[in-house]
Image 1 (cartoon, one colour):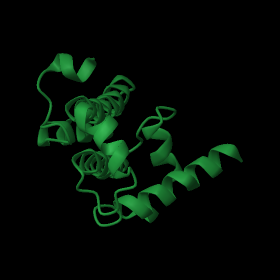
Image 2 (spheres, rainbow, N blue to C red):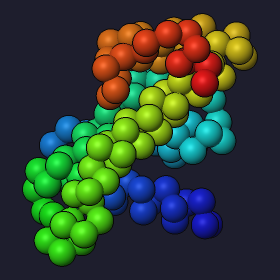
Image 3 (cartoon, rainbow, N blue to C red):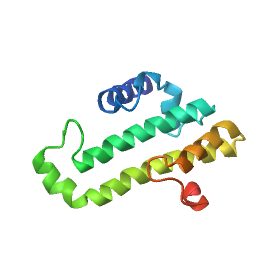
Image 4 (spheres, rainbow, N blue to C red):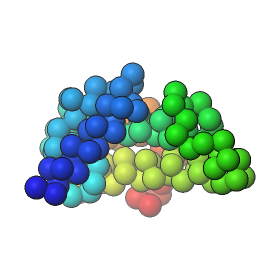
Length: 142
């Protein structure tokens, strides 16, 4: 029940903040399990949905840090005191986290012998999923 409630909360967040770039209703519980690292991607289509979700979430948080989000929930004082002096580090942290999630899903799928979803995640990384693409094999593994 807690997991189902949490998945519902994530979908509400995606609907509220990522709607123009992502159809949150298309994101399944299994997709969210992949994002949380509890389950491996089971198909190339699922890997694509997970990658699109990561792209949308990453774009939202990067826009939030940059002050471009459609509804700035941070407030001017918090932005000036906390976000502005740390903007570069926050951007790097968001992009790095999304890249690590993409890499983890790809490596898990390939290690389990599931080439279709693993190859799809690698294609998304090479295509520039969020942080400008995969820079090295070491970046994929780390």
